Length: 323
Image (cartoon, rainbow, N blue to C red; front, side, top):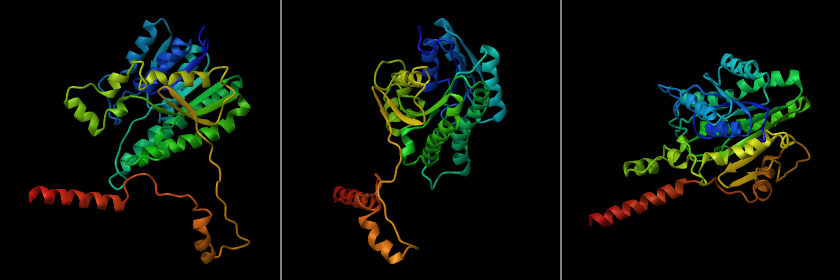
């Protein structure tokens, strides 16, 4: 028997990467899967053929059940139709996994409005839209519902990913709110912050240099490899959280990466400063360093001083080379 026998799952982004692995894995655990994907590349550009058909073919070849739904996760009409397709085809909806996404990486001073809007649209609205229509169904049935939204380690901050980091932090807040609002209807909700070798890891300069040397892309070498970068490391945690046994867990964010799973701490105030009335500015300036500012350090990354120092070192090396 599978851990998800009899359940119906809608999985967005199921054409590739972690989403594809999740669709295949959950089908192996007995779920009937609606594999949902619009068919875009890692930058959100349309592909000639939608790879979600391959995901469905794999599931069926293994003797399990799946259908494809081809649509835009951030389009309210497509989202309603996708949820309706699951219910019309299989009679119910138990699980929604909002995983679909792509990247538009730029430093914030180079980022266009379109690059900002596109990422917030697919990751945040692309979580809200399916969740809304799943929530309508679950509210009516009041039987069982399990909701997963994807965050990322980037929600803690990622240089050159201000749009992506903002979107993934938004999904953590969305999950907390969704969990609180839907608990009365017997629905749980959790956020997954994953790490695995997918097409999103195929973009770095180091990777491109490796490709020029004839090495395969991380998304190829990681897929179904059994190593710590294998996307199939992610769905076991998703399966637990969406199973009957894991249904008591809700409103949390989980680091799910390779052979390591972890629970993130919940935000809470850790330093306090009080006033008896309206704030005295001189008092605040005096007390801040030893109260609210105690233990603070600059964010990790290259500071202005370190950039200047590295530039001076390179200049000195060049001058030495020329002499």
